[in-house]
Amino acid sequence: MPTQEKTRHLDAVELLSAVLDLGSFARWDAPPEQPPHSGDYARDLDAARGKSGQDESVITGTGLIRGHRVAVIVSEFNFLAGSIGHAAAQRIVQAMESATAEGLPLLAGTASGGTRMQEGTPAFLSMVKITGAVRAHRQAGLPYLVYLRHPTTGGVMASWGSLGHINVAEPGALLGFLGPRVYQALHGEPFPEGVQVAENLFAKGLVDAVVEPSELPELVDRALRILMPTTAGPTEPPSTLTTLPSPADAWTSIRISRNPRRPDLRHLLRYGADDALPLNGTGQGEKDPGLLLALARFGGQSCIVLGHARPLRKDGVEMGPGSLREARRGMRLAEELRLPLLTVIDTAGAALSRESEEGGLAGEIARSLYELIGLRSPSVSVLLGQGAGGGALALLPADRTIAAHHAWLSPLPPEGASAIVHRTPEFAAAMAQAQGVNVAGLHACGLVDHVVEELGSLPGSPSGGVGNAALEPVEFSRRMARAIEYELGTLTHRPVERLLAERFRKFRSLGV
Image (cartoon, rainbow, N blue to C red; front, side, top):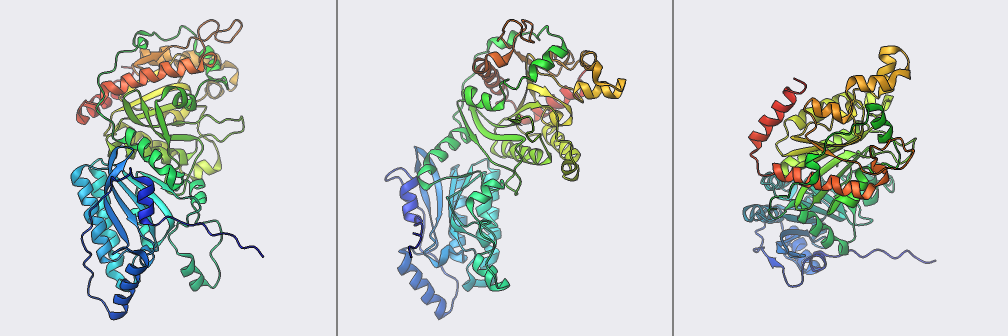
């Protein structure tokens, strides 16, 4: 009977060779100082050194990845299952502190069964000081990237293995808190299959991507080009700075915005951004298709992007509370990495369902508003199309707001507003005009700072000769991208306290 061939996983040295530029690795490690130990443990350490060819379960140092100098910490699973004792923890902490002191991004490649049982509780407690070193590195505004290798479990997965700004995983890797052998010993049955697998963690929004070791250099290169940008020069003012709101009435704009072929956030990233690296989920076991989160570059300006993902089908999922929890992950990234935040609003309304209510949708909208109005990073919001209700408002507060000609913002879809006031949706068009939901009204009240025109037009189209982005999706996306690049560039060098004061003042005085 044929047996399934086992996948061979790279050891620490092989991973370093696969990821780092040839000949660039410089090791940091001093000989490990082990705590007092028994003869049995001494023999275990000797055997581990002979089996792995290493003196401890981690290797640390610096190297180049596509020319970027990075600090690296790589687990060696062949040394006592990559377990972390006192000496390994000291090595990890010292490497993290050196990376922080030198202003280097840090890449961790974990493969570990957790803390070292031979050293008991003191080894277990070492996860706290490692986490403290991660926190100090992140609070210095430096990227921390994690590559979860097979297997990563226990205390490592529950500390420094899960704290990356970006967390990606090796295909098929066993990843989880509880080791399956421990579960079986305690419960007398195997742990359910397919749960602690990289691909399942991706599906649940716990990791951002599943990538082969050979793909890691490209991913790190793209991430660092965005996360650690070179200082961009001033951006030339785009022609859209002088664009006026569309003369179309509000109902015409609403009809145009509902065209299923209208360019959305996906188009903006595909055709307008110089690069966009998608992230995935909240990192806390939640992935809502109503929101897209990414790292992106528009010209010379890097940013964190979060925005509504238009459902691709009529029965597609609308934005739920999980979307806003994912959005707040993006807000935290922007603050910690000291990058501007770009929010993109394009929603027919948040999901109205039992699940949304029980998931705390109203509270998530409130928390999103709270975070954005006090965000300690520059921010730009884009009204791209539909803007109905609290789901739209939740991504709106920003230092500068750009609007497409036929975007709009309303407390409810106009049909709903008409039903409340007139007990019928038949007065939707009149309600939209009276409420000032279109860009002309939003510009007049002081919300919209920058308008991007829509130029596409066909005879007989609902745009009535006033333009329609659905008829020029690529060109429109590129125009919008240039406006975004300009607005990001005008904000990035302003002191945070000035931004906060001006942002608060803007929203305090809207409509006055």
